[in-house]
Amino acid sequence: MRYLVRTVVGFGLIVMCWVMFGYGIYQLLQIGTCASGGPYEVARPCPDGTAALGLMIPAALILMFIGAGLYATRGKPPGSENPPRGALVITFFWTGIFWSIAVGALLGVWGPEANAGPDGKLGGLIVGFLFIPMGALGLFGLKEGRSRKKKGDGQMSTGEISVPPAPSIPGFGKASKALRSRLPSEDPVDKLERLSRLRDKGSLTEEEFQALKGKIVREGR
Image (cartoon, rainbow, N blue to C red; front, side):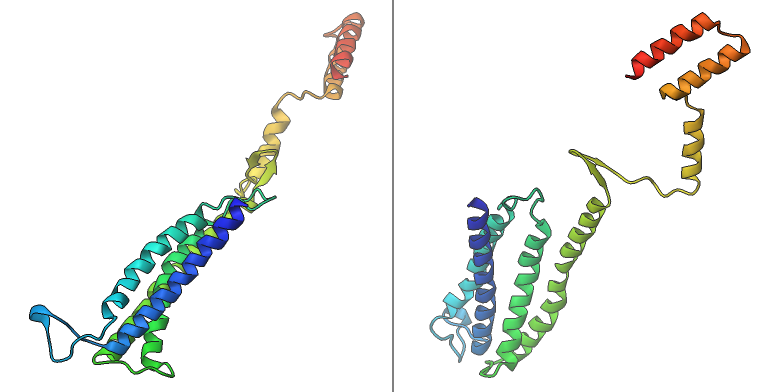
């Protein structure tokens, strides 16, 4: 239940913030340059609601932090041992911010009902074309997450211990085989064969051979 609630609420907040970013930029471009009050008063005052639109973007950023935090701490999916992919949070947060603003900016200039205010067209084009490649940088998070997953899949799992595959070093297999051939074997059959050779050479008497043979047989059971 915790996983489902945090996933739905967290991702829902993230998507809502994307819409708020795009809508805020779109509406501000329709207003264009303006100023109101004090020494900044000009011939073209800002229309009502401009201040609220200006606050929409920082408010959306705060809500997006909350949504990303909920989504990142949702835990493991029910019935799965795989941890959640943190790269998705990076992509949602970074790429989502820049691309939603870029879409709002381009729609504010080229949209079907767009009517950009003074200096709004130039500003919208600059923001739109600049934020598209900046948002694409967040996709590297997904690429890094996939590469780590592939590295994890390339390991053999025995119980809870992860055993990496044998290194692909030239000559490693031959060297390993030669080393194993020089080590004393613990196989009972090999022990019996060595005892038989020692008996044949006269190093062991028949009684000693039979006693050691019985010991090896008992230990091998």
